[in-house]
Length: 144
Image 1 (cartoon, rainbow, N blue to C red):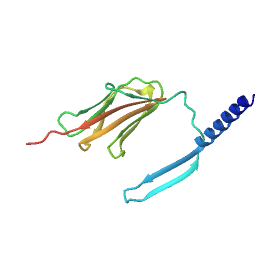
Image 2: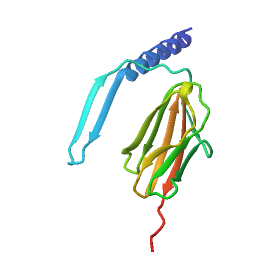
Image 3: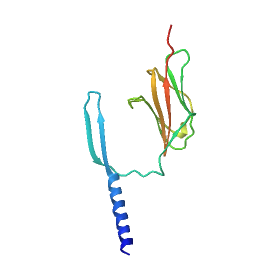
Image 4: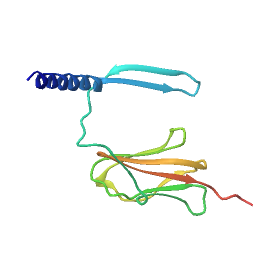
């Protein structure tokens, strides 16, 4: 009986501690001038419908050159049912492009990103509990 009581007490304390830990938020921001700012605070816990699933998609996210120009087109044709965000970041995790995704207005039309520097980028589409992502590399032909 003591063992059962001890187990129940330990479980209750662990659950209460875990619930409190979820409210603590720490952030750290680094700026281009070298300054770093750390903050601590509290935020309400976020409840999801389930676990977040990261899905690498080989289709549905495409980047291709615009004919007869130095521009790049981004196409996102993945089917989704919940609103979300499409984000493209460079290797420094700096946002290069961001767009809200609305399942009602998903035409699948490519978006002109203009001229983006050659390099490796991460394209993420966050909808509901899913994060669709694809790593892309932009390389321009050398001119003779």
